[in-house]
Length: 261
Image (cartoon, rainbow, N blue to C red; front, side, top):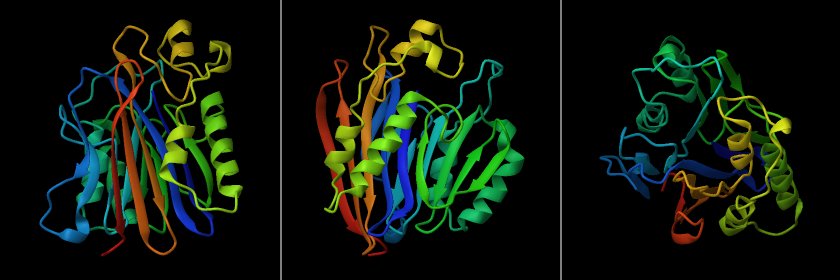
C-alpha cells in the first residue's frame, strides 16, 4: 500500500502541496531521494530510486514537472506484466514533451504494466491516469487522496488525509514540510469491513489500513514519507523522511530550490 495526499491549485500561495508515504518491503534495494545526474540543469530530477527496476515512485524536476505512481490491487489481476511501473514516472520527468502529449502516448501502453495509478503535473496542469479502468482525467483545482484504489476512494486513511491537509491549509500562516510529514505518521487502523476489497486477507487489510504502516513481522511497512511544497513565488521545498523496521525516523533529505533557476 502507498498513500498520496495533495492539493492541486487549491490554495492561493501554494500551487502544489503534497504528502506521500511509500510502503514496501524493507529488503527491496532503494536509493534515498537525491538529485539524479543530468546533462541539463533545468531538467535535473529529484527523486528516490528503486534499485531493482531503476525507476521511481515519486519525483520532481527543477523545471516544474511532478510525477508519482501507486499500484492498483484488484482481485481479478493476476497476470505478470513485462514493464515496471517506475518507468512511467521517470520517463515523464526525463521527457521534453508536454504533459498532454505524454498522457496521450500512454494509451497504447496500458497493457504492458500491472495496474497503476499515475499522477503527472507540469506546474500548471495535473493529470490522473488509471490503466486498469482506462481512465485519463485532467484534475480540477482541489484536494485529492490516492492509495491503491481509485483517486479519492472512500477509504478511511484517504479521507483523513484529505481532511487533515484541508485543515492545515486553512490556517493563516506558512506551512512546512515537517507538518506534512507529521500528518503522514497517522497510525490509526480501520476495521476490514470499512475497506475496499483487494487481494489481502481481512487481517492484512486491517494492518495496512493506517496512513503509516508498521512492520508486523513480515518486513513490510512505511519506508519513507515525502513532502513537497511549491510556492507561488517559485520556491520549491522537498523533504524525505526515512524509517527503520521499527517505524523510527533514521534520516531525512531536504532540498529547496527556485523553479527554473
